[in-house]
Length: 195
Image (cartoon, rainbow, N blue to C red; front, side):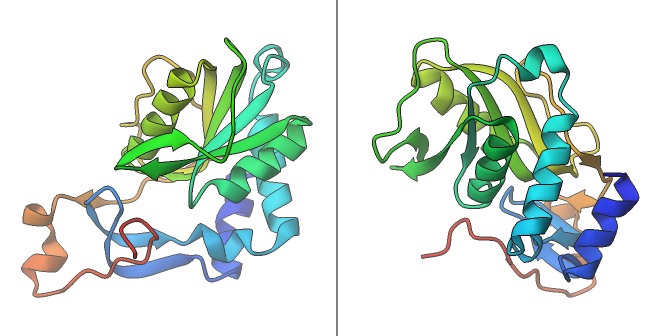
């Protein structure tokens, strides 16, 4: 998939939103990518995730035996990437504020893992997921995302990162947000922190 095709799919599905948003990272932005609106269509999810894994070098891709993504946003991404690779798919969840593998999920010692996300901004959830994989005995071989909106600021402790699309989107700390300064109030469209 080309970058234009990914953006067109997000626009077509009403998943590229403009306004004043509070991201799960705590940053503010005038743009929000609501991947759930795209991933609700199995064909779109399969197409995006197949393209994600196709962007990983063959030698690395052959070593992946499991895909893991953080719940909630990356459960479907993990599943579809696992399907595209022909490997199993797991997800991490928060337990006492920390990402862990639950539900009886286990990794073999040294098992090669691809960690995936739908969207990265700071990479925080991806790093938390990577830590959970490592704590469970797996070896993080690489990370991937449908869209990297970090403008190159995400660092995954030396693990290679293969986003399908790099989309520079403006973000601000709350104190520096021009939308707040203009009297706006951000909305929080994501799932983190919901009860």
